Length: 437
Image 1: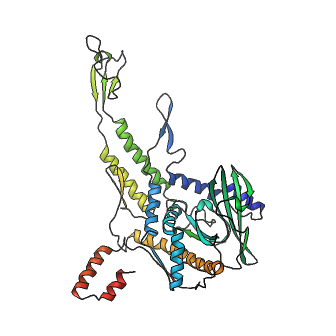
Image 2: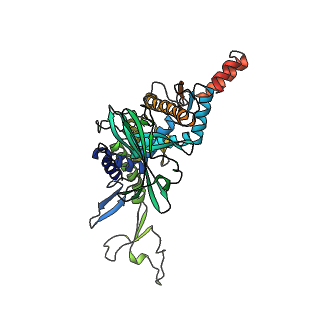
Image 3: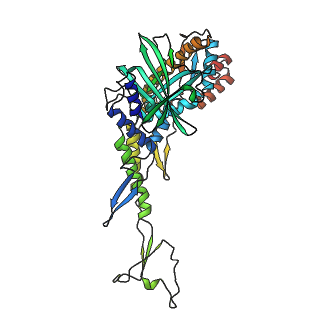
């Protein structure tokens, strides 16, 4: 579908979008995120007579890693503050109406999976709506040093019996931004133009908006990882982009662990004469899988023979843990972030040190996310003035308070401050400033 959109953009005079390398990487990352990689999770094994189709068991670590990064970067404890009572009230109301923190947390997960995310506010029926778009809906058209200036954004929806595709095009005309809103009916790779009114909730949206501003009306957010796979691209890297071999290793080890129990299942081999009594009545349940009936000419085999293979659980447990350690290290989470216990993967919950690699990586990714959130807030304030005439200070200072609970044991600090308050060492006003927002 992206190729069809790029062809449509080329027809409109924007021929610079799309390249095969980026598209191939996005497909690869998406397949690992979904846990179903072609020719890896489905494979064939020759058993001496034919090639048998097999399904490889998966730990689903790509998605787990993305979930963890999303929770580390943008969770319910993150607060965005802006100077000014009216400005803060407007921001809180706008974010709440858009369920921003809920949807943005999911977008952070998809950003970790695909490398790039976008926040695109638009006016709909007198309200500001923030579209959260992952890399598959972001089509950069021009950029310099990875700073995107012209960009198209795509989102799809199912309405009745039709698949609709909404395309929002941000491009500069004479140094000022125009935003074009386009709607298509999607049938395979064919796009048929439709009036905007055909989509529910799009009534009143103009086909072209002349913003009259040199500032862009969209915000891009990336994982703070240098793109070593496609240096000319403006798109970011998935957090596991350089850990594909480790993802394979974790699934191979886990699949072998699962097969150890399947192939090592206890069996009792029976000669035909052992299956019936002297009167010909069956001695064993023929539906019981523990028994295997040998052929008539089974030679000198015992009439009843037990096969009880020992399971290499300890070796598999150690191998899976080694793979998880390597995977966590390659994805910036640290070597001891995951533990394989009782057949499942657990996440370390201890408070991390400010000197740990995880702490430094969290801070590194927060640099990009903080800049993106501040840009989004100022964009929302401008829209509040331009479209709602609210008279807000669009240049008000913005502060993003990230969650430091993984670095500081806040419950312990709160208990300590309560004791200091009781002893009179800490004043009530100082206590309020520390713990009451």
